[in-house]
Length: 131
Image (cartoon, rainbow, N blue to C red; front, side, top):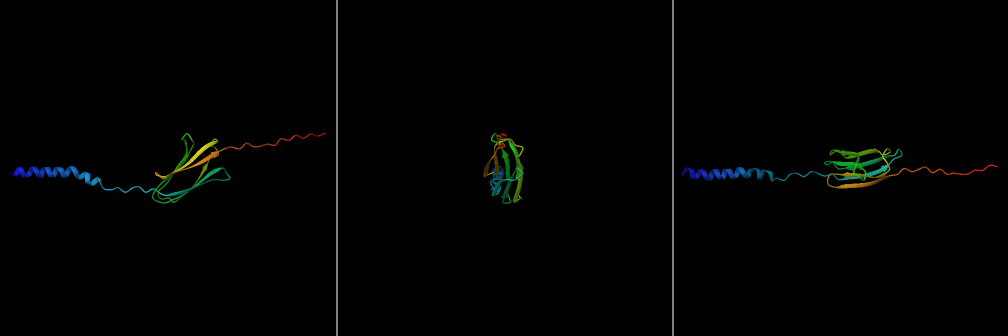
């Protein structure tokens, strides 16, 4: 009789132990917060590309300068606790061509196109004849 009572008790105990970890892992995990952000780009008189980012705290935003082939020339992450970032990118040494400034918070991505073109100086030629 004792073995008849012990056997279902052991089976019940083993079943509970087998399913206990699955009960613990079904808890909802808090989702990572994605920061909302606003950006602006402009060039200054020294030939630098100025980047301004205003964002909410709690999430990071990454800024990248890439060419069409995907080569990265600049990468910086703006941390979770920062609200603003002002960056100056020296683009005077980059070759002429099309580039992209990519902003992302992990969910939303914003792409701004930048074209670099060196202007050739125009020299006016005049013919002066003196008699």
